[in-house]
Amino acid sequence: MNRNEEYYALLGELSAAEAPSASLKKAVRRNRTNKFIVRPLAAVAAVLAAFTVIVNTSTTAAFAMSKVPGLKELAKAVTFSRSLKDAVDHEYAQLVDLEKSSSGITANVEYLIVDRQQLVVFYRLSSKDHANIGTDCDFYTAGGERSGSSWGPNPYELGTGSMPENGSLRSVYVEYFDTEVPPELKMVLRFWDADDGHPAAGEPEYICEMDFDLSFDPQYKSSGKRIEIGKTVNIGSRSVNVRALDIYPIRTVLQVEGASSNDAWLTGLEFTIKTPDGRSFGSESSGTIAYSSDVSVPEIQSYTAGSLYFSGARSATLEISGAKWLDKDMEKVRIDLKNASASALPSGCGLEDARLETRADGTSVWVVTFLEKDSLGQLLMPAVFDAEGKECVRELSWTPAQNKYLDRTAPEGFSYTTYYLSGCSSDTVYMQLCATEVWSGDIEPSRISLDLD
Amino acid sequence: MDMNEFARRFTAAKDKLYRIALLYLGNADAAEEVLDEAAYRGVKACGRLKEPEYFDTWMTRILINAASDELRRRKRHQSFEEFPESAAEEFDSLPLKDAISRLPKELKEIVVLRYFSGYTLKETAEILDIPQGTAATRQRRALSLLRLELGEEVQR
Image (cartoon, rainbow over all chains, first blue to last red; front, side):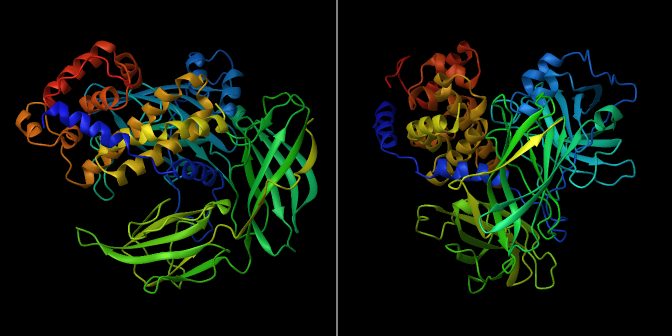
């Protein structure tokens, strides 16, 4: 068979290949899960998050709220976020314009958008030696402690869905839940060659690193107002006290608490804020909610949404359309890895498979697959503990898929998630449930009228 | 583009996207993972697609990027080797499917889009965000390496 004949044979072979049917369902579920991120308990806070980015601003930077040069380009770059777009349209952006170069890489920190609890940094990279540069970022206070809870660089919110190109505007987010953005921060950027892949843990192969000192205009940080609400809504058989709404320039924060008489903790809330002119404020893409505060403390919880700050609305309607609950008697799941069994899980969910793999490098990894109900979203917090409450794995990863040992597909309405526990020091481990019950959609939403004046 | 429209268009396109991933990565498991990742990226970004008529090229670009990211990841953790263009004998010794998977990235993209996905040279250049002349040059180099004699336009 010559090459052309091979080509037509391969074309025929491929034309018969059919895509798996679950890709879209998994993608939608994964996107919803990311909107219901449960803030870590105190015990797991050290495990999760902490990727802080420190941005430096010069004390001589232009802090003026108007006439900020280059805003047109910034406006184009933030179209993925209505809150940021509204902020830029109202010239709510701080020009930084700091530049550093090292090892053939130049970094320009160009803009900040900051309010009391959130910071977004916009910066650009260029290099003659590296076609694609990746960055890792950390933020530190003046005292040298890691600060904030952040994510970024996010390559999927600026650009075409892959690693940002050199020269394109990149963004990094830093959030503060229980405190405010400090008056000053230091950002440390560490650069790696994206064509070589990310430096492996413990074996840093960064090209170089740079740090930038930032201080923030108090005028930006003080913007915002609180709307006291003080009303109770019933969600199914349980109650939620809606205490207040904090409106900041780049986010809105709803303060709620589950009633102490409830038999479950509130772990997620779905809501939309609608203004009389027809605008809806929720998450940036769908108009529903973001995430909750510490689930172990049944006190005031914060849920974020898009910002109403620049909407000009004098009134609005809060619609609560869904909630997630964690049964107070079912917070922890005990997992017996050797026997592949787990203590009580939400109805329909189950531990499907657990086995120990030995990798080529000799390390042992427990591969544990759970069947999860799609309506609940994420079943377990990504942290593993022993009976004493200590972390007991060296490395934890997970994927929304079944492992290669299972030869069955999940039933309709269910999906698999597989966890990889590397270096696990115990055969019996504990994980935290995210939710045991969800209420949403098919019941009339609870509505509260808001006076925003 | 709203989610319903995205879901409708993605469902119609997913087989084609899967085949691109299959040829790009060489095995069904990896192709499925990449399709999943591309679907997720598309779901997150669909609100920014203002012109639905560009959905196919937009989604294909997302898939190609996801496949490239997966290949980069595999290169760090496994021995996966792309042959340089000078290694003509190595290409000749492989079945066509394997030879395509070993092509340098910029040539593989052209071959997959032009000759297995039905895109014209112009459309391929748009997806890859390169000049049409560059796409044509890479196409010639790829066909030469693979010893393929195919016309400029291939029927869909």
